[in-house]
Length: 275
Image 1 (cartoon, rainbow, N blue to C red):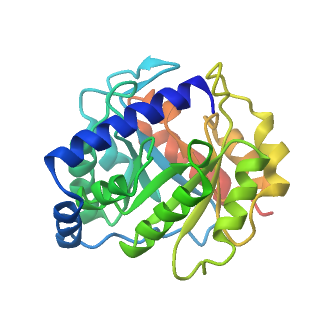
Image 2: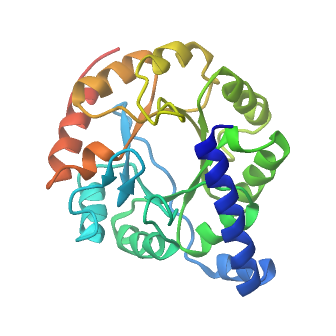
């Protein structure tokens, strides 16, 4: 594990311990049970989709434009422009995120029929319950941070609460784990996405060639997501041609005063191409 992921894993575990002191797992489970039902992740029959990301700060780019201003309006704009889901960073120390952001974004998106996904450095099933209680319909899990057994526990918790899951990989070893863990799970019973993140975790720079290098190793029957480094319609078209079904786009959208324009351009470009 990289120094960055190690730092995030420790911080995440500390947040879980603190949260458990405030609220027991049983109490949180009851809150999750009473939350509005999760929204399904609906992928367009036209072919390509975007998970648009709401993040206020990035370790590599710092504060992202006017992100701290109308972030709720930005989330709604993503949904209205055609995002399949909105990813919400809830990590506080390096991304300025919070579960309150997730709760409020989920509330704004629900009338629009678009699910929210919790993106964090999840290390414990308790955090899946937190996501569900806050109104999320999905969670992201970084494979490299966790042993196989813990990822299986997280998948089981997500399935129990009808959440979709995005399993994030950085290399072939991660993808092998994803294949093993999802092989016996029926796609119609649990929506699992497989993501490839092109960011180098030591330098935090994007390595675009990673998408092509790992495309042949993507698990079958699971929609593949290109993460990091997709900033233009041309980038998205390349991802589609490599076999990726979605892109998770954060920094490029957060940098725009009007993210709807870029999102529409990406969807129009990818959905008009025949492969």
